[in-house]
Length: 147
Image (cartoon, rainbow, N blue to C red; front, side, top):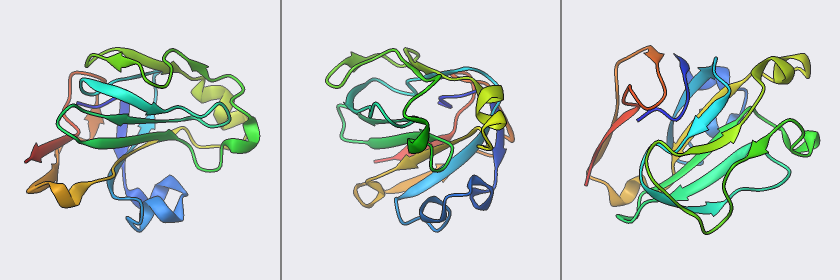
């Protein structure tokens, strides 16, 4: 499921060269209109850096997700990013992970684009992006995953 509400954008619009070229794994980008990121699946929190607008999740089946808001947000030192979980927490699909302020990010020159990357696609049979252009968090699929 989509971890954020917004509209799907081309990976090139994410302003992150590593994400755009797929160096970090297969991914999708969402221009965020809401203020909360949710767990798209049951997972364990692997990392949630204090300085960044990002989180890494791992499902019981081994799927590794990296969810990040904006490119180069480390200089913000996590300002206006409210983390709602900690490393090691087990979360259910739909659990709130963090609150952000997309308007404040735009005022700092950062496009509020959520990049969702599957870090271990080689262990999958297929990862197929859903066709929907508008996404409602926890209602619309982001991918179809085939093990």
